[in-house]
Length: 272
Image (cartoon, rainbow, N blue to C red; front, side, top):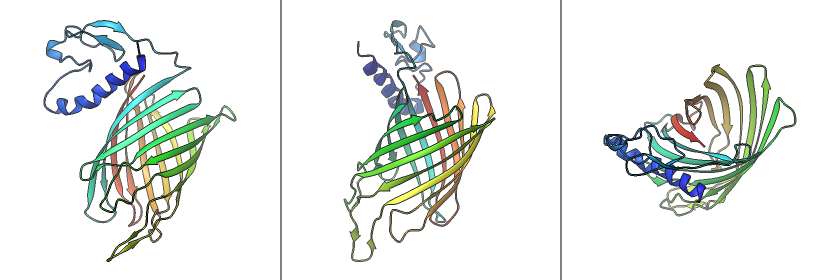
């Protein structure tokens, strides 16, 4: 049996189930059988069930030291700078972990503009000491977002981050450099010229409760437009472990200048 294929089908089922849940479709264990017809409730994500909801086979994952992954679905509300404009998007993210490697796929769908860019990333974690970890990453930003100018091209991004564990607190800093390949816009009323951009952040976090990790972060990014101002944000981030599989991430980001945005986000993930 193709174990990863079966797991992917179950992950996709969760995503496709969201609209049904909004219309009073109840399937607490998300096995594809509604609660009113489920003779075996509370089956796990690794169980293949029949039409009555009872297990006919249980998937066996590789040891966690070798490989595991998660699926994360989220929502983000953004208020644009000091204006009254706002946007809402839903996101889907897959992370695959193998030893010190992580491979990530992320995309979002915007309420007013359709599919955004899709990011494919690869990261490697180093452990110079028991307190210090370093993550090096590279990303391909695929041009799945389209606009009236059709000027969107593939971008490249390189990043590094450092995390130091000091007693109960985690201190982090990092930065990135993005190669922007979008075509300049030379319109009759305005011109937009693009440039490569960079960013950096500093953060401190701790476990407020055994299952709740919280951190505060300052982030500054240069604009990808030559005449654009830097983007500055102060953020509060939380990660809550619901159980051994389910988790949630939520937080708020405050824009610190006119070119920055305020954001609320809420994610739910399932860890295999």
